[in-house]
Length: 393
Image (tube, rainbow, N blue to C red; front, top):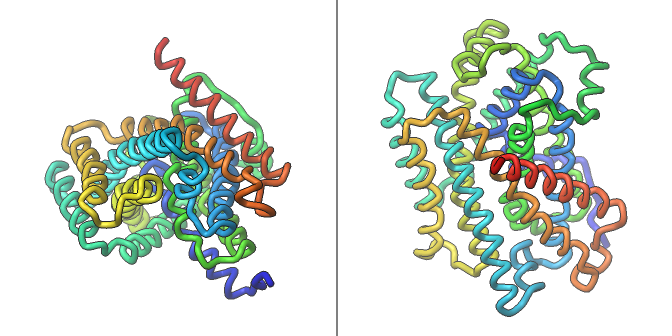
């Protein structure tokens, strides 16, 4: 008999799945959403609608696989494709996730350091090294989850400050509703569109979410994912609305100044600490996600030398970028776009897995679910290929 869904279990599931929304509200979301509002007004708001519902559909499918089979997404993929072909697919998927995590990590480190730079007078190289040392120590001893959860709460508190600011923007409900559902492609916006998608539909979250769902019922999982991800999407929307208040080139000091003027000194400081918290929490998550994906797809043992080498390389990539004295904002936008371009490669295998009736039985995709998921795969593939084509022109 299926478990009944009580108010207590439903609320617990929402809190449980808030880890997914906390994971995509990182420096990438803060930066990409605010720049979208600053440069294009409300014209890219529809992308957040698409990406938020896309996250819901894809995360639900990945979690449903685990509930149906008892195995996570990576294990199901390796079981579905056997022999050399299966090994090749597993390695290709791992490399896509690994490269994506390394790209994310560059943005995570830059975001964390940019937040600290607003609060202290220490130099960027010193702050980068300090962040790296603490992250490596926490990952090595395995004490990351409680800290990441706490930092996630700080990020949501920062989102609350942006909600207050968003109410001060000159946008009518009719304009907001129209922008949320009307696609537009203003000139020069394609990279930012891919960035908004890549920072919301995080490829490694599909493997991560699939690995943590064990013990939940289907109804608990669905309620938790829907509510938690929609809340994350709302924060992304208000970040974009706050960007409307910055008509000139976007910068972190300028955003802190806007919050200080609109809300109070505490809000500017909260933004700085929230930017650090978002970057630092994600700096723990991305390297770990790469190693967990290797464990799922390639059978790498947890805390083995290979497991630790994987997250160390991801961490090292972020630190090298952080020490290279690059402008943080363009890099953060670019790495989110890279993951948006890589996303269809991962989702096509998820789509195939949830249509394997022999494996999932009654948990297989319905026609409606196939249309929803298929549209996400198709649109992200078209946008990604379009972006790659333009890059070579």
